[in-house]
Each structure stands twice: as structure tokens, then as C-alpha cells.
Length: 86
Length: 130
Length: 269
Picture (cartoon, rainbow over the protein chains, first blue to last red):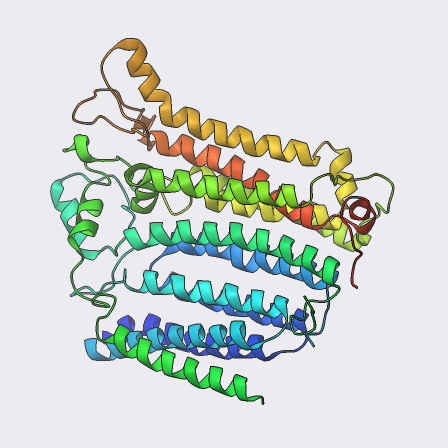
């Protein structure tokens, strides 16, 4: 049935649209803590797209690096410098 | 049906390019160093996605499969059917290296920004008089 | 909206239109095609090929075989780039170390109790990923990054003085990192040393028998394939990564009183 082959592609399409919205909100936001949160949401959408593109090794590297370590050190940086830009 | 699959794939390619453009705008136009750093990580993730995209393939019947043999092959025919349905493993290995190097440079960059703010008192590059 | 922002936005939009047009019509190569490139076909053919062992890596997982066997030198240099970045971070904060008695309470007791349940599970899952990297998706870097996330979680909920009392100071973490790198170096020259001592020839980063040399790492373990050198590379890489990433995160977590004597300036203006 052709619908079976199309379902992963439709899911990847919807997730890509969500990631565009998350990127725009992350660049736009003035409160830097909320911008880190939107960046982690965009990384989660990317991890789902990588799984649907048949790359499981990349998913296992990308999840702890981009949703674990990088938002952690960015939140430490925001705490030790300024919270609101401008 | 293969046409609609190609159309959805093209939309994913265009979504990655739009993400790259938005994050590049964030690197150039925003005055705060921490915002530039966040936009830089999004930019490098989008660039890595291009490499994973060109490794994908379609097969004539059904799904492609991951590049892992489920069990040791018993005859050369198993190997041939595996080669006919598996995706390209080489871009995945290169992107793995790229993600690790990006993480190393980003950790060092965070340490540098921390020391920069201690010395100049602000992370806004328009307010610093050098 | 300033004029420079508008100009940057318009030029980024034109860049997006141009690059998407080029990519869809084959600028980076054909996308979603029905056939693979010849190099990819060759790698998939020789990742587990017991009828042609001279060209093969004998591990069912193609991506790990490419990372550690077919293109092992790339991974060696990537590990050394990670090491140089950690050394650079230590050099930026040189002279600072964890001092006792500043405030070692950590977070509240609810967070501490749930971390005591969750953190050993994350450590076990990360170790499992590092062990079966040659049989299914996983490997050294994946397992090491999982375990480093668990270690930083413990360092934040209990304090970093708690870790220092348990014996995990900054120099211990750096020693763990160096032990992992030494293990990678030993595994990569093991067959070369064995060939020099016993006669014959071998290569650096050699895994299975090749055309000119008849030495090989063990390729079968009781009832399932062991990838040869891939198994030992995965173990040492996970030890190296857990030491390096935890050291980097703890250096960024150092407090004001420990840094003020060493680095000039003060926190937040």
C-alpha cells in the first residue's frame, strides 16, 4: 500500500515545519533562558528527522550532545553573564 | 506514488535551508554574544543535516533499511540483498566526526565568553569601547 | 527595524532561495536516488564478508567499521582535537581548583532522592551502548556522552565539593582522560609490535588479516562476532570521553570565590 511508505515522509515534513518555527522563535527572543529552551526544542525535532532518515548512530550522538551538554553549558553561561540581551 | 515521496523530501531540504538562513541572520544581526553563540550552534546543526540528506536513498520496493546486518550472512545472496536496500553509511561516519569537533570548539568558546564578560563587564558588543 | 537589519534579512532570504534551488536540482549530487555511489556499495559489501577476509572488517555494523577500521586515522585526529580543546579550557582556568567549605548543600532533598534512582540507570545504559557498538547502533562516543550527562547531573544536584570528597578532583578526571587515550594508542600499535617481535609485517590500526600480513585481532567471541579491534577501541573511547566532558563541565561550574584569586575582574559587571 503506498500509504505505508508515505507516513514516515509526512511525519518528517510536519517535524521540519515545527523546527522552522522553533528556530525563528529562538533567534527572536530577548530572554536568553527561553531562547535556550527553544534551541533545545529545535534539536529534538532534528533528532526525530535523523531517525526517519535511517541514521540511528547520529541520533545516539546528537541527543546527549545537543539536548544535554550544550543547553547545560549555555544555561551556566547565561547565569554567569546577563539574562536579557540589550 | 514516488512523486509525492520526492515532493515531501524536497520540502525537508527546503526546511533545512530556511533554518540555515534564519540562524545566519541571528549570527550577523543580534548584538549579544550569547545569542550569537546559540545561533551558531543551530547553523552548524543545519549544515550537518545536508550531509545526512544526500546519504538517503529510495528502493524500488518498500523502505530502505539501516546500514546494519541483522545477523551474519549465510550466503553471498544475503549480502547482495542487503546492499540493494541499505542507505549510504559514509556520510553518517563523517557527520559523527563533525559533531564531536563542533562540541569541542563550542565548549572552549563558552569558556572564552565567560572570561570576556568578566573583563569587559558586558556581553553586548556595541557597548564595548576598545 | 534598523536599515542594516533589513539589508541582512533580505540578503539571507536571497541566499536561502538560491541554495534550495541548487540543492533540489542536484548541486550536491542527486538526492533520494535509486542507486548508491560505488564507494558506498564497496563499504557495504566488505563490512562483513567472510569469503573475502582480506578486504573486510568482519563487523555487522557498517558505520562503526568505517569510523574505526576503514577511516581510523580520521577518528584518531578527531579524538586529539577534543583533547586539545579540553587542554585549552584547563589553560584558560589555570590555577583554579575546587575549594572546600564554601557551600556544599546542593539542591533540595526531593531532587537528591530522584537523582539517586535515575543516575545509576543512565550510567548502565551508557555502558551498554559502549559495549555493543560493533553489533548494533552505538559505540564509544555515544556511550561516553551518555555517561558524561549522568556525571554532570550528579555534580549539579549534590555539589562539586561532594564529588571532590569522593575522590573526583580535576586532576583525577584529567588522568582518566589520558588513560583512555593511552589505551587507544596501545590497541592501534598492538599488532605492529607483535609483528616486530615475532617476524613478519603488520600495519598501524590493523584489524583483520591483510594481503601482506597474517596477524589478526580475535574476530569471534563464544557465539557472536566480536569486531576485533573495534570492541577495544569503543571501550577506551568511552573512558576518554567521560573524563574529558565531565572535566569541561566542572571547570565551567567553578564558583566565584575559587576564581577571584586566580582570574582578574569580577562576576556580572
